[in-house]
Image (tube, rainbow, N blue to C red; front, side, top):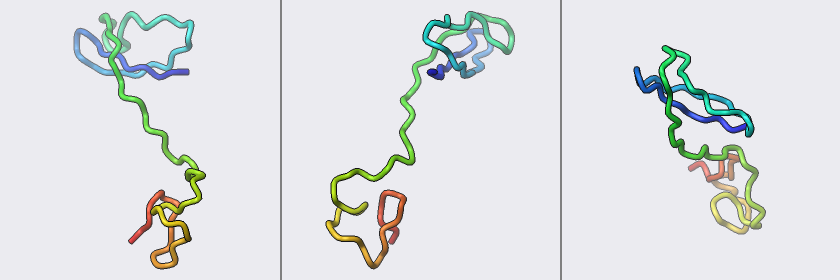
Length: 78
């Protein structure tokens, strides 16, 4: 289910709402009951994705790095 952000039009409090596809937008804010507006949110970056299957290591070398060793962070730790 998507997570949307809304802002209270009276006090500018921003809140998140987990919303199903058929569920209507909330009409009032939980803080004071005033009308709300949906905000445009940036897409969340995907974290902890497995390494790409390109055949290369995290730093772009064909072979595994020995010094410094390749780490699981997506880049060589130097």
